[in-house]
Image 1: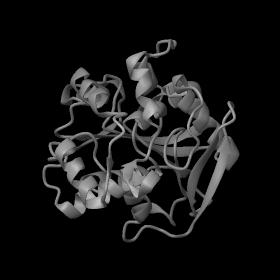
Image 2: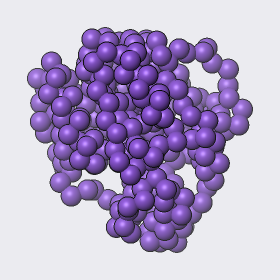
Image 3: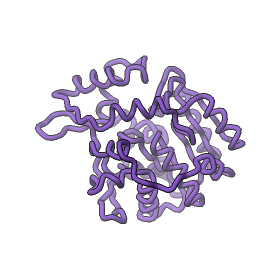
Image 4: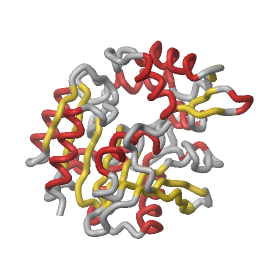
Length: 291
């Protein structure tokens, strides 16, 4: 469901990963005189998750919203071991090249923020600015355990109202003030109509498999990655109820990266949806600093 005010001035495009997957993104048209905004979604989310960013900034800014591999309209991976941050970084770099994006303002939600941090290590010249949405160099174990228990369950629902109510049962502590209309809007971002007309989550259930048996990867110093963002506008957003990004980690991030703006969204857990007034105002301030 398109959010009221979301730009319809867009083109659906695709690029091909190095392992042959066709990956897709929505390119919301905007000014060519400034870096584009690149929205990188979280673990179980997709390009629709950034409808609030599109509604607020597309037109004045070009806004590019990809579906990561295994999500939304992008191909599912042949090997679930490729559902790891290093591969997502490679995919995103391929997108930047395919779309002709020399520099971008990266807005990364959760996993997308981890991808943004890794981009700062391997290709800092591609980042004009960065927004880290409820994620940092230290991820709290309690939040990871909660995600591990819920991801990849493969549930389906007969109607959108059933789906919305199931989300409320699962995530009520994250968005304690949501009405049914809010849960319906969130359901239509996270889910799609699947086989047999039932409502299902819009991702490959196998993205959960690396949680059970993580493939070997070279360790990455994410604090060094945060420091690699120095010299450009950076914003860190935290939900006040987050079990992924602690207040202590947010405070350390501000110490490690002078000039980092931090914003806490009240009565919200993991993750802020970026339609909150505090988040939108902070993103606008960051964009005003982008050259």
